Length: 411
Image (cartoon, rainbow, N blue to C red; front, side):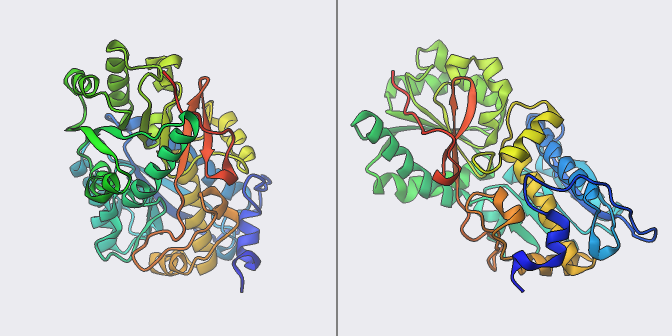
């Protein structure tokens, strides 16, 4: 049976952006389906965890208001939330507490930062819990695990796809192809994965020279030395790979202090933290103008309705990769439970492995295709590029989701 014809799917989802919001009567005997989220809700990455929580809670409400899991008699979905904190050890401890306290959990997602996800999935894999992640590191699905499903393009895939697109944009906009790149990155797992192919072959393939290549341990206490090196080396653009808003702001503040802000030096970031509204509020509208951000998902053309509902619900000015993917992962877990007719995690995981979806929740992911290969990586996973334009985040890539064309900042 084709995915779009599956009766459970039609009953559960209806269609992205138009989920039925009418309460249905639950069968009295239906037992709640337990899904879990492990995300940083405290520490330097707490903002990203809060955004994930907003998307996940909205998905749970949408599912329950649409009648719950039909194949389980209208069972409601219940979301467990565990704080990954500010270290891999705390994230691993959260996963261990989840497994010990809730042996009936059917699946989950998290833990945002790749370093945390690597620790969490060691625990969930041993417990046989299907686990979705938006984290980027190739190591996550490079360990031969069977219960981990990575929905983002891996960091290596992003690195190999993003820079050619960015160089083409620069050449089209200015008539000149950049030749010198500056790199500032933290040493978290995602950044390490992203930079490995860049240093190994991408720079050589694109005839780019790294005139700055600096690595730091987050959180930053002072960005002065980093930006002094950038100012002295005079790259054509800066690839900035911190992993939290505080470090983003510190780098941007120091760039502004040294006369490099406001588009004087084009900045390419990676990850949804670069697109949070408080970055603009703290750093300034002029400072963030033109920053391009490589990300795994986000709202764009085709997702206007779901973004509008999210904005009304949360007060956020737009919908970033964190809430979009959290929403999508809860929907995918519910879809797998629906198809399995069971909350048993092994049966849920089997349904996820069998996914070949091109509508419903698949529309939340760039590429509009949800299918996972033997390693647990999403087939046809596209990257997304968004940009700060006039105080807002707009989607510029892929073309089918584009809201506005990208602009290469000019000094």
